[in-house]
Image 1 (spheres, helix red, strand yellow):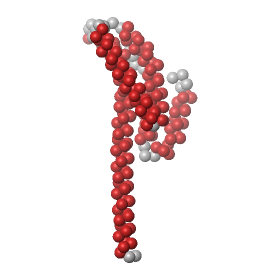
Image 2 (cartoon, rainbow, N blue to C red; image 1 turned 45 degrees about the horizontal axis):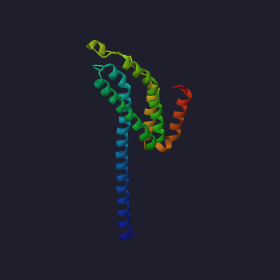
Image 3 (cartoon, helix red, strand yellow; image 1 turned 180 degrees about the horizontal axis):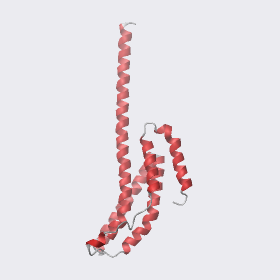
Image 4 (cartoon, helix red, strand yellow; image 1 turned 45 degrees about the vertical axis):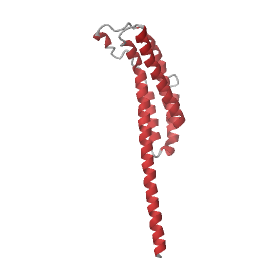
Amino acid sequence: MSANTVTLLVGATTALVALAGYLLTQATARRDRETHFYARALEAIKEFEEMPYRISRRPSSDGATRSAVGGQLSDTYVEVEFYRAWLRIHSPLAGEAYSILLTRCHRELREHIRKAWENPALETDSEAQLNGEFDIDNSVEWELFILVAGRELSLREPLRRIGTRQAIRKYRTQYPDR
């Protein structure tokens, strides 16, 4: 083997190693960004679930308080809908799982929010203890989103898409009324 061939092979190998390192670094950075985004989307759901408690714990029933709390409710709703849209664009499967979770929350929270507005404003500290009065049952939908998001973050994600679609279909079959 000539010196030129060896030099060429060493250069090509170095370039391939550098390219592999670059691609791995980019994939890791992308995964970190997406992990943070999925976590923020779930945090938005939790903030939405918290709204009946915030409404019930309002300090008064005057117009300014109603406006402030109503503004928080509106902002929270806009945020969860933003994540729903973004996830559907970014990853249709994660978007579908998030949409399932959010739809479940909407169904249960609608009545809780109505009841929370009917509660009188707080007058004592003991009234602030609502002890799960507005809890919702969305653990199945929550776990479905966690499963789908985890698979979407995997480097093997393209190979697992069929299983992810099957998990969503299984949910829809098992829980048609949720």
